[in-house]
Length: 171
Image 1: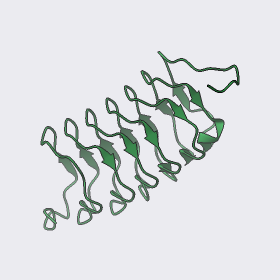
Image 2 (image 1 turned 90 degrees about the vertical axis):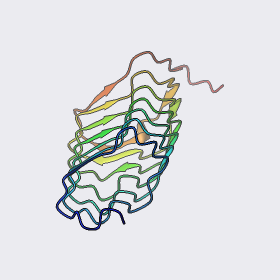
Image 3 (image 1 turned 135 degrees about the vertical axis):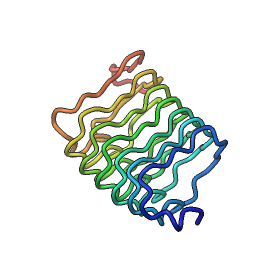
């Protein structure tokens, strides 16, 4: 582990480093980490439990990468997390329980992706402090109410430039 002697490190900025993947538990020896910035890399997938050893992590940014898929429990056990930035990716699929039990999460940014539907149950679940989910500029066609389970009752779902078929007919 490249970070084993940096236990008090609070911020990591690894922008434009051509990083293609983050190994599970890559940051496990950094219990004081509050913020990770992985903008402008080539990361294509966020694995389950990648950040689960970071109990104090509050913000993670993956702006402008190549993420196509977010696995279940990708952000597991991040109880202090407030903001997740995943704008400008190629995200097509978000598995159930990807954003789950993040008690302090306030904002999820998913603008400028390739999401066509949010039909999986519990994609966004148990998020009592959620204030907003930004889904602008996605080619969304359908959103299931089951995707949002036990989230804050007054959160903003930000949508624009989308076309949703409300006719109930399947294509």
